[in-house]
Amino acid sequence: MSSTNNPLDGQTNPEVTHDVHLQVEPENPTAPAVEPDVPQPSTDASTNLVEQQRMRLNQTLMRLIQQLGPIPAVPVVSSEEARVEENDDVGLVDNENNQQPPTDNSEQATPSDYQNVTKLAWKIIPLIVFPALLFFYDHFVGIAVFFWCMYMLYGANERIKGLVSQKESRSIIMALFVILLLSLQSCLVVFMFIRYELWLYMGFLASSTVVISASLWDSLFTIVIVDTIMNAACMVVKCVLLIFTPLFLNNLTRSRLYATTETTFRLYRSLLPIPIWFRYVSAHYHLIFVIFVMTLYGAYKAKVFYELFTEFSLAFTSLFRSSAQYGVYATREHVLELGNPNCSICYEEFTKPVKLQCEHIFCEECISSWFSTSSMTCPICRQVCEDAGKLGHMDGSSGLGVTVL
Ligand SMILES: [Zn+2]
Ligand SMILES: [Zn+2]
Image (cartoon, rainbow, N blue to C red; front, side, top):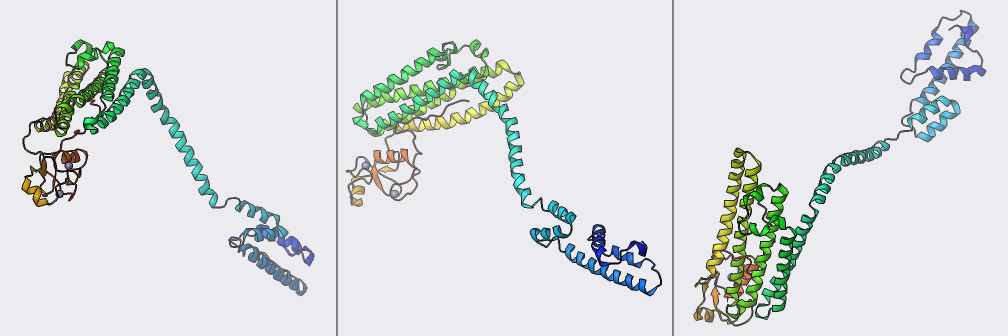
């Protein structure tokens, strides 16, 4: 660049400023200063003019550096307004830098996550929903009958518990109504699915041909419905007991009879699925796999049967127990030592008082009812009673669990 190309008066300074500003980079602000170092003419006048021009250029560059340097630290509005007056290009750059505030990134990530989850859900849900819908449609009647039976059993169980708690003042009409309802329900189910010949399975009398031709659903449905009907039969027996036994049995013996009835039916129900599963597996799978599966199944059933048989033997032997099941029978001297002739549970005079290990005395029936509905602890001192185990279902209740295996 020669001296003839550089403007010498002040009017052209804005143009120079404009050109320099466009070429200056913030990272290299001294680059335009090289221009005045170009060799100049040797006259004094021209030297002074060049020196003046260099000073003006330096001042202009310094102003520009001062304006461009603090861009990141200057507030957006003030820097933008300041530059728009001098240079439109700088203003455009600032506008681009101000278009993406840092907070927008976090706000945009959340909707994208929701979209990904939604897309994944739309891929997975049909794989579960459609087979489930087809399964429910194919077996709608069987599933509906099962839930209807369970609802009826739940209602009957609550009724029977209420009748048992009423003891001698129970409603015989209500007991007969429960018997009628459960009997009709069981007969209706057997009639609806007459092709299954459910009555044969209740007595281990089913022919092998019927089971072999059955599918997995048929076998499962047979086991569940038969178990439900047998549970209803157990409730019918309890209703018969609560109608007649108050005539010749005391409350404690009746409670033990309810427990014996429940454990007997549970033991029997646990055996009913065994031939059905064995015949189904042996008819549909290889011999080695059958042996492997039935060995595991036999071990599981042996464990379950042992537990149920323990409960049954405990309840059955309690019917003939001459000694007190919990603690020992208290003598008259024990009651006199106590100083209070009334039971702490029924607040009446002791009837067949029994003394627990903690020396507290209660009526035998009262403490038996207490143990049947709560933990095996003394009602007064909360000491654990470890005598003879605990009899369940003495209140006439029935377990509503379904035996599937
Ligand atoms: Zn009592
Ligand atoms: Zn006690």
